[in-house]
Image (spheres, rainbow, N blue to C red):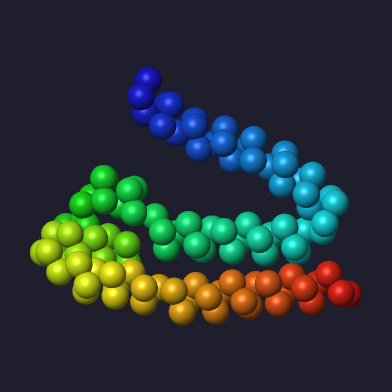
Length: 112
């Protein structure tokens, strides 16, 4: 029973998410909606802390480290808060570039 619920919930949420995204795609165009969804997915992936930390705690021999879990491990685990903050801020330039590129692409698509 628990396994079937764990499998069914993402399928249902994905199916329910298609309805508003389809409406937005009809109104604004598929490229714009897809670009925004991709942008938010990238940001969410970088910020995804709880899934990896709760399920694996960094994985076997820290094999599943993300920036967020690594910053937590360094900052809170060892008490070096300044290094943990520096690691978490290292994501900012990359995410800023991704956001700017996506927004320029969306603006270019809207003009044409």
